[in-house]
Length: 297
Ligand SMILES: [Zn+2]
Figure: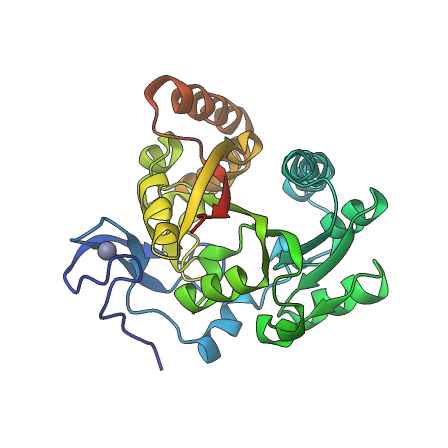
């Protein structure tokens, strides 16, 4: 059964307004409504597929983060970008964490953790997708569990927890943040990357913006709503960093949804322009990385 949200996950307000009606361009073509909280401006799908229903929206060979062998041009670019982005992610992690254990929630096939391990870190992953998790365990030799509660014995033991484009997929948003908090060392750092629905490319493409990705993306964050959500859990944002490659990738997919074709040059230009506008106007980048830690009592 589809579930209806009656209370804003960020500010607990109960009045929402319609924001956009969007099709699942990626897979089912079904239509979903995004609502905006009248209290804090947080945007989310409402109603949304329940936990038990959501699986079928991931049933595609094209769902790239879980797929190892793909052939078309976008996937080749994506793979190249992935190598580059793993190094970028590690650079972020290692500038805030020098030693200890890293937990990657939504680790997919485990490539990022394998890289961290090769650099001397202890690593663990959480991945609900069976296929991806088995790949991470068997091929990349990463210790993984299917869900967070299985990590109970690891309370307070991670010096860094990462969620790379994962938080927007999580049903139990506030519960998950509390669990993360309990797993983190008191001085640990939480690193979260999410799309920014306030970015230039989000405004340009409107309902064709690929990072709306309904119904897989349940929430659409801005810098303001993410900061507020985490402040409710006593986290402070220490830094916000851009993920500049995402502007190109999202523009490429959005062009496809908008026109049905692959307008690579247009996408390149709009990706570049989005990154340029992010700095110039302060709307933020297409996707951003938030560095958080728990407020000292
Ligand atoms: Zn709200």
